[in-house]
Image (cartoon, rainbow, N blue to C red; front, side, top):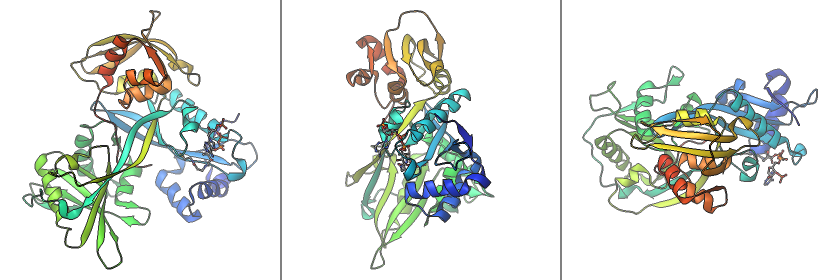
Length: 398
Ligand SMILES: CC(C)(COP(=O)(O)OP(=O)(O)OC[C@H]1O[C@@H](n2cnc3c(N)ncnc32)[C@H](O)[C@@H]1OP(=O)(O)O)[C@@H](O)C(=O)NCCC(=O)NCCS
């Protein structure tokens, strides 16, 4: 129906900031701040010829950690259609074009948080990971220590992500499935998210300026009466002793602080260190992934080095024909690849189900159960072994 074009600040600012303001109950000033944060070069609008545009999205370059490697990803955000233009296929056109653009560029994945899954499923996204909020009384933290030194830190240094923290985060994120490889957009939000400021503290066993073995960003939400709740925007550690030091730091908020809450997966690593299960978990979101370039996606992620797999898949993808057809998937030595083949396929999947299988959110057998894929039990188990991992999750929102 329409094609996507880059955002033209002079021509599009008024119409697009209005569409986003009305879509997300924002303010015009807030939206201009968002443009600065996300970068105007990352905005796309639906080309409606000489008429003012009514639909837009943002493409945020990032990555997801899968199998210990970073898979380059375009995060999709700010999908907005002006109220008077809704219901005529604009959002679907926007998303189709965004998927085609990523596929043309050889970007392995797209990911997003969906307000309506129906829209994104139509263009090949599927649920691929989760996000939960864990809360607990602060006074429950008895396991912490004060053994290692702590240094106040900022997420950004001279406008760029703080490399000392990035190194620590990457080691932490590489141990889980789905965590984001963050760009400056996300790092900025860790420190300042809308009106909320988060203060950073790093565990530095060798003293200030030394290697960061763990860190946390702490926000405080004041209650009537003066006490407050502690909210974390981020936390990472590379050793158990650093995690215990972070717990100690947090437990030092107990005199005034009431509750502690943070975002993670169904079992946050911090929770795994606690002796008790006095926690409450609230489901926040299932995030969705679209495989834009199947070959690039398989090449980019890591696999367990013990897995040897050679299997023929039949993939359907109406939107990106380059992904469709029969592929020989091979996994060996921790790496994967696909090659075209005429051999008969043992497992059939649409690109949607494959996204959920790829991230380990659904096993192939579960995808068959849901009617999203077909294949014999043996093939499903073999494929499932390659993509198996712990539940995919991420802290960040975009
Ligand atoms: C969601 C939104 C972008 C849809 O825009 P749109 O141009 O009206 O959507 P389309 O006409 O392209 O609809 C495509 C599909 O999206 C889904 N969809 C659209 N509006 C929907 C709604 N209000 N509720 C549930 N699903 C909806 C439907 O599956 C629809 O397909 P169908 O018409 O065949 O049923 C628009 O309503 C909007 O800007 N909403 C506020 C902001 C928002 O939710 N953004 C998405 C953030 S992830």
